[in-house]
Image (cartoon, rainbow, N blue to C red; front, side, top):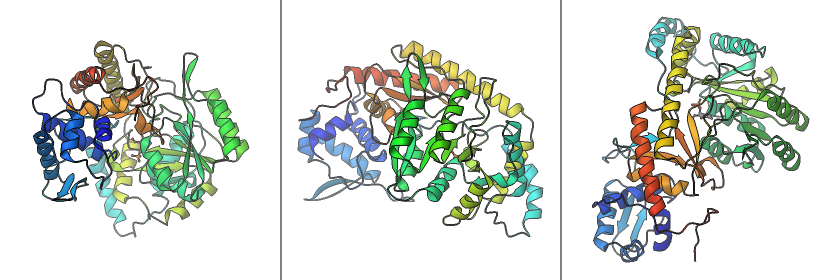
Length: 471
Ligand SMILES: Cc1ncc(COP(=O)(O)O)c(C=O)c1O
């Protein structure tokens, strides 16, 4: 990596007026390494050249390198230079997460009220399970019954044999990839989409085929014709869509749109995973019926509705698909922890109040965040979603990645638009979640506004179209 390129990647790494150049530089480098934009093993440029490119002293570069060596993020050998590294887990390093940093990169609420009580109520039922083998490849019958009843109540008649309990919605997608795809197959996705879904698709050696979400004045959301054309032209083996409060845009596909796409998938005979992670986080008061079709795999999750730490999700599909998924799962896992399933049964049987409170709290935080952004970042635009966990903000210039890198120096971790695409880009967008308490959101927005001002003042050239000119 040459010094000029590294200087470009670092962007505006220095905090405004900061006298701690080495600390700021180390923080900028740390973000690049931990985000994988400087992969482990990348040779760093000679200190003298980087000092010239950044217009700082060589002593400052050495001091920054020393800090990163202490963290295990840089290693060097006399005469051979320095490289980036990923520290060994369990070493005597300082924690990599700075406790003073506000984490706005994860759009995840904390546990819902009542998890501990549900665990206590589940404990006596555990005793009855202890004399069984504990392997429920399809999931515990009691839980499948409750989940099936929920779909039936939402208007989609479902029997327990149409449910597979998984280790989260993410595991549902991974299992579907295992069943329906092989190396080199195409998988249709929305763009932007959930970054870990992209990871799963790439990890399965399949090729993501993104269809851009629309963003026009005449309605934002899904390009129905574009999806249909892509199905025809690229014959994907699988599709993955988030139609309820899409992560990251917050859009919800309306009923005619669902019917239109369901028909298109049926015609193309393409199985589609519909990620329902956010379906309970609906503030509209008017839930829509589930996306339906004989090749539809609804991937649900307890993660956003109750707690991510339960690591529980499920797939609802035809009995035939569920049987094939259950068989495919045996290649990499043999079921889901029994105790957590008992806890989820208790939560599903519980009163509705905790979920109503969760929605109320999220609405309060969503509105607070929208107000803070309108005050402190008046040139950012966004649509206030009717559910979900984040605002998808359009920035006045294509600087999202640089802004995210600089925000770290202002104490805020945030996910730039480029994280939500398989091929980079979307530099005009930033996802800002409203899962933190209002006072924390206040500090985070001040940090983001300061970072945005710092990026706007930066002299590094960046074209309106998002290209970084290189020579
Ligand atoms: C759209 C989407 N799908 C899946 C997941 C992961 O869900 P789970 O924790 O159930 O695996 C998330 C979590 O952030 C998500 O936002």
